[in-house]
Amino acid sequence: MAPVTPRATIKPYSHEKFITFKLLHTPLVSKSIIFVLCQFVILTFIFELSTSQTVFSSNTLVRGQIKDNDNDTYVVEEENSDRWPDRSPDIIAVDYSKDDKFLNATMWLFVPPSSLNLSQYEKVKYMMFIDSDNDVKTGGKTGIDYKVEIGYNNKSQTWNRTVSQLVSSGNGINGSAFESAFVNETIKPHSSAGLHFSLNLNQIRHGDFYKVYFYAGTKMNGTTTLDSTDPVQFPPLYVSINTSPSTLTIRPGESRTIELQVNSTKGYDPFVRLSTDNPPGLETSFEFNQFRMPSSGIMTIPLKIHAQSNATTRPFTLFISADATIESLRSWSTEPTKGEYPMTISVIPPLTIQEMLFGSGVPIKIPQEYLLGFYGIFLSLAIPGIARWINRRKEVRHLERFMTEINGAYDSKKNNKDDCKDGLEDIKRNVDKVFAKGRLNESNYKILNEKIAYYEKILDLNDVEEKSE
Image (cartoon, rainbow, N blue to C red; front, top):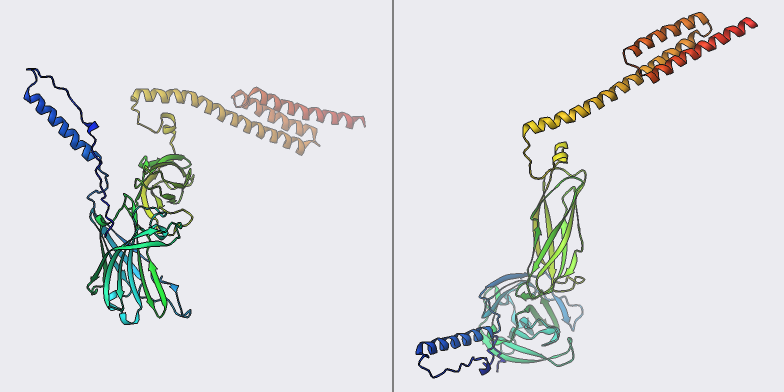
């Protein structure tokens, strides 16, 4: 007999939940009041019934496909070690759908059952395993609670379908299990390319979260060959990403930190790994990129985005990806669920002088007369400073030119006192003219005169020495 357990149970209603009213037998108590009170009690009862049920169904049809690796059958039992694995149970893909009542699946194989030479096989089996409570400690080996098997009986030469419940023998996860079939029926031979499974979910016990595996196997000449798929989670695991802000504007050399929100199916605590596809000129860094999601299904992570100083000023698309799996991050034996978010990042030119003065945010409207006044003040302060700087540069050039002329006149004519003095006097007159025009300051004028007087003194001393000799 099938071990049927209803998915939604109604709790026994307790009379303590009723509200008891003591009605006074007075003329003021009318039938209308009694009617209102009865309606209130009935509504309370209905509400209690609705809230006491276990909520599972959602009227949502779930469809999907499992893609299996090609040519991945493996041998589990063999009498002839030289034998290669049989290719016929190689699962190509499984299409599945689930609603509130039925779980349906179509298994696509490298060799369809209708194309098999059944006489050469000792066993041919195709199975759908259900871990109905998502718990490896219950049911049979690895937590399998139910099995739907479609197999060929070589003795009776018939196809049979069985639905069985597996109960653990109590020896742990890898222990043996007792199998009790509550559906055993002969079915018609399979003529289509795909193998169809169908399970009435009301026939089994299951919680809000469960998973399904698919197996195919053959035994020929003492060699058993199997193939299996990754598990399908119900409800399906999904993962999505959003950012705050949704877009970003950044300048070369700047860094911004945004908030990344990761969402996943509530009730699971999957492992998630984050990554980005950095465009040229942009760098990203997560505060942490591997973590386990809480069962609430919401997680926020800071993401730092840096634009390099040589980043091109144009819009970029930054792809932020999330890989999620129920299993450990170290194994990733199943294909992870993927989520991706394309974020637009616009790299704009560096700040201009006006933006540095007035800011680069909301434009500020300044009256023209104020703006002209500001520029006037700015120029009245800047122009004299620039003029002084230019004048100092000219004074330095005059000083350098006259010093060169003085040294040259002395070096070239020092052996002829009169000619040398005449040359120095000519230079002194030119220095006086330039000083009179304001092109030399007093300090530089004094330096040049002292230099000329120094050379004239040397010439006089040389002349005295020559006469004394």
